[in-house]
Structures are given as C-alpha cells and as structure tokens.
Image 1: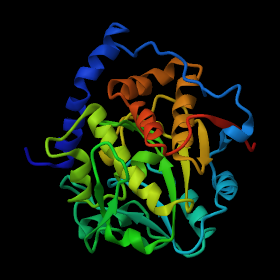
Image 2: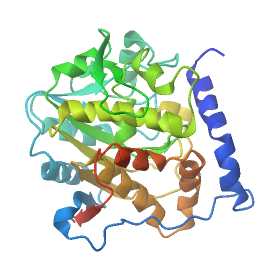
Image 3: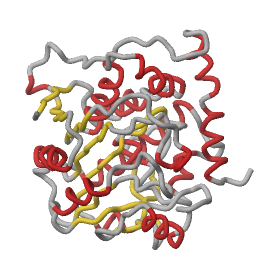
Length: 330
C-alpha cells in the first residue's frame, strides 16, 4: 500500500479497530460509558503539584496572559511548534491568535517538519505551498528537516535509544509547544506530547522510527512516541513550555485536513504549564469531566486507542507529574 495521507488515515482507523470493539460493546454500538477522570492529588499541598494555568477564554489576550505565566525560562532563539495543518483544514489554530502570540516572543519562528506519508506536506516544496494556503505567512516558518536529520539521544526509553529530529531543531535555545488539543487516529488524542514527539521528528527517518518497522499500534506506538518526546524534553531542559488549546475538539488530527470530522464537544479553553505530563493530563481530565454527552465521541476515540497510556508512559519515564494544581486566571 502506498503511504498516502488517505491511506495513512485509513491505517489509523484500522489500528484502532480492536480497541473500538471493547469501547462500543459497552454501549450497544454508540459512545462508551466512561468514568470521570480527576486529578489524583487533591490531598497534596500545592507545592507538591505541578501548576497548570487555565482560561475558558480562547483569544489572543488570554493566550498571551497564560504564556506569560510559564515563560520564565524561555530565552534565546525560540521555536514555536504547532501543527500548521493540511490545506484548508477546518480545525487548525486561528492564525490571528498565533500571530499575536508570536509577536510577543522575541527571536521566534514557527517550526514544522515534513510528513512521512505522501501528500501536500511530504516535501519541503509542497509543505511551503500548504503553509501559504493556510495563512502561515506572518513570520518565518522553519521546516526543521529541510536540510536533513540530527539524532537526539533517548535516555532510558522504552524502545528507542535515539530519534532523528529535523536538523534545524539544534539551532534553537528554547521551545514553546503551542498545541491544538484534539483526537487522533492512532494516539487517541494529540496533546503537547504528540505535537513535539511526532512534530519535531524528521519526516522520512524520525517519524518512521516512531512508527516502527512493522507500523506498531497500541501501547508500543504510544511508548515510541513518548521516547521521542523525552528526547526533546531532555534536550531543552527547563527551556520548554506547553500550551494546549482545547478548541474545535474533533476526533481527528489536523493531518486529516478538510475531511476532519466536525467537533461535537464545545470549546473548553486553554491550559498552560511547564510540565508536559500535567498539561496533557489536565486536558484529558477536562474532556472527561465535561458534563454532557457531547464528550462521549471524543472519549471513545481516546479509549479505543488506549490514548491515556501516553500519560502512564510519561510518568514511567519521569517526564512530569500527574498531580497538578489547576489555576484559573479568569
């Protein structure tokens, strides 16, 4: 099978088939009944919890206010990693909001990498055309693997000892993960981890390492993704922070493009932290804690792909804390 974007999305659906069976059997073929996800640190003092800042307002002013809560160690040349999307994708982050944030970060550029599957972002030339279509023209967009790969070591990973990142990533002093949180065909959900782990890996080498020779699925794929994320977190140390925008909460990744399913869940807000595990867990918890059946479609996607194993695996590799304090700035 030629690895096109269409077949890539189809493969992701097949990968989740068996997991979907158990989710659907619990509810007679519709969305699964789920338990409430909550932070597991209610009795811990705030000093022992990671800080996750939250606003229900999804706009430039509140995005910048959240960023200012977590940017204390961001300095030098700054990479802003976001998913710029397939052509005319309906759910990608609003360009004006991203532009306003980027303007507040000195010496910054948006960074991306080419895709493993063939299509509109598989080569640098095609990728740049897609960037123009989607309106990412207000600042430099550095395609990290335009000039090849750079191996980043993975310390005590599950499977990988190194991951090929886009070579340009080594040119940056700090990284801001600006993530559109949503569902994902293989990972269940795409948060800050997926954004940096897949999004910084080089298109033809690093992404293939994460997927594995036999296109791993389930926990094996998720653990390889965590390995990649750990390499990036270790590389940047304290000079990395994370923002998850919980808007346009489709079950599909922005890599699906114009065919992505429309969201059923309303927009929930923005979360920000210097702790990758805490911010992704808080995002998942916010979906699970939503009072309304609209959440069930996204939760079924997460559970059918064992998506929460991302959180367990990050905790095992000591990438952050599952215990967090949610601090509302509104």
